[in-house]
Amino acid sequence: MSLFNLFEKSPKIETERLILRYMRPSDARDMYDYARREEVTRYLLWSPHEDEEYTRSYLKQVQKCYRQGTFHDFGVVYKEDGRFIGTCGFARIDKPNSTAEAGYVFNPDYWGRGIATEALSAVIAYGFEQGYNRIEARFMADNIASRRVMEKSGMTFEGIKRQSLFVKDGYEDIGICAVLRSEYKPCAGVKFTNI
Image 1 (tube, rainbow, N blue to C red):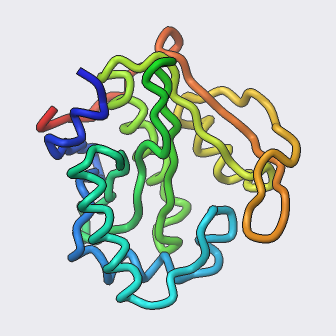
Image 2 (cartoon, one colour; image 1 turned 45 degrees about the vertical axis):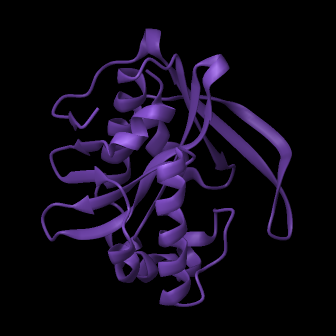
């Protein structure tokens, strides 16, 4: 069964500190708290959210995409305080080539704690659990922190595609990291439900 179909079953991933689950409209306040910040969107394809209503509308659209099987991103909840602190999941699925592209964004109040690495590692485990052969992630070349997250999650840096993506107002050099099923080392303490 493909990941495309499995997301219709509302999968949940649990790690030591995190719960990864479907995003909900009730997450709007917490999402807006980080999605409005320039430092968060600096290396992303989208601009800061203008207000909480924009965020709520986005999350309502996400619900439709979940139902259609066209959205593969998890909301991330920090167990210690129950707060929705970001997203991590698959930005793109290439079923014919058994490849998924992972992506993530987190509230800066939680940066520097290894949370992005923990979430990405869990998403990688989920992808391989579903039978994918390759999981990759892209980053703007000067976003060294994101590259470190990818490498700490078991990915290998593969290179830079020069000026390969037009973002906001200019062309960006894009780095790529990836991990193959054959070289993947499972991470302990990851639990899947509803798959």
